[in-house]
Image (cartoon, rainbow, N blue to C red; front, top):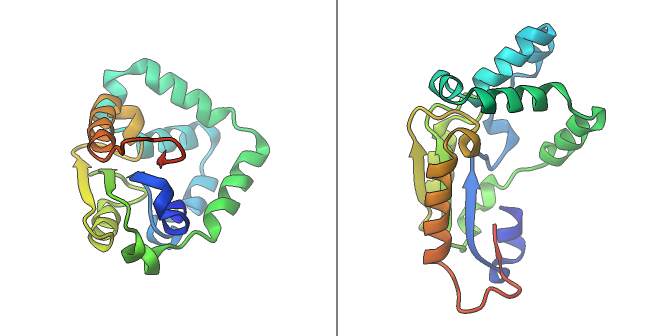
Length: 168
């Protein structure tokens, strides 16, 4: 969003996946997560990211995700928190002129689908795609659907030359 606001002429299309224009629009689960033991925390995080159907359909994905949740560098959380803490593009969404695809899991418990709907209605001409029964791990659980939607959208907004132009 910030790139599209700062450098609109350098971007041919923008894809926003499972994101929010402001941290204040997400579910604050910090205290709840901190109160859980390691095993409970891992299960809770998996539940936030993958639906029960997604976990049942791809045990390898669950294992990879569980490892990623367990083995995180100590400073990774601090870097992520610092990056999103001052993120608020809410008042400027209407200034985004780049063709935009808002792709979101309909059952996302972290960034509710109503936030995606809000974002899409505020960005002029944005296209909203809500994937049914998908949670926060949109690109993980619905990788094929995500790839098809993003590919179609990017290609439909491709310019003659992509040199110096980013598809975000």
